[in-house]
Length: 94
Image (cartoon, rainbow, N blue to C red; front, side, top):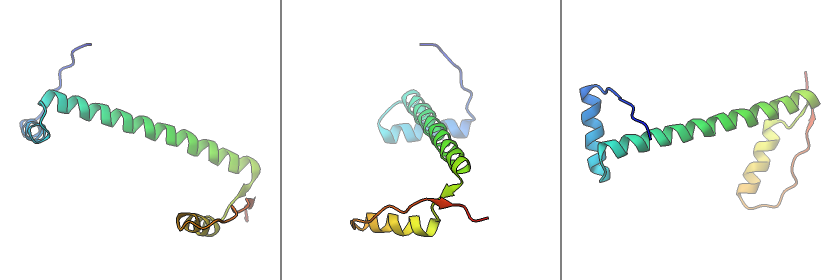
């Protein structure tokens, strides 16, 4: 484990101390947990971006997609517990 110095403005330091106290932990543990959560959130976002780019590349390559109105209806029906057929991708209208 290595040491890193973080300089906090006094008002933020006080807010961190108060939040840590409410959480029943130390300011150090609170800061570490916040860094871990932020790092995990960033990793999830990066993974999401990769999936989105891959899916968009697939749309561009095939020229096919499902109109939002159809997909929205499909998703709403699925959420309502209905058994529905998945919409079929079609060529993009230009």
